[in-house]
Image (cartoon, rainbow, N blue to C red):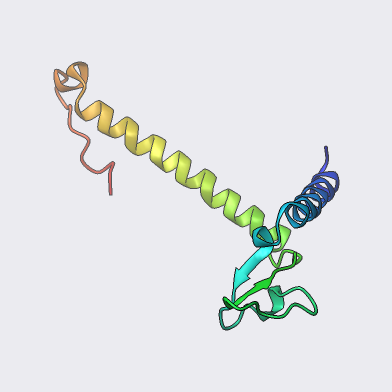
Length: 109
């Protein structure tokens, strides 16, 4: 599946899920009224007696570039975690501690 097919699949999934929720119970597609969430209200939806309205699906406001940037940051953090885990493991290693220069000063920031 390429990126466009994936996006199409996900969009169809949420549209289908929304309709299934609507079929099961209106409660599943209600959100509380909060200042600023009006764009999420389904067109023509009026607040119920408890102050909830029917929500609607909105297109994502995140670009492909922003997603790629977040994924790159996630990968960088995973590499850094592996590096720090390795350093911590070497500090407690019986083999490393028996070496002449067994400290790890300067590696961890």
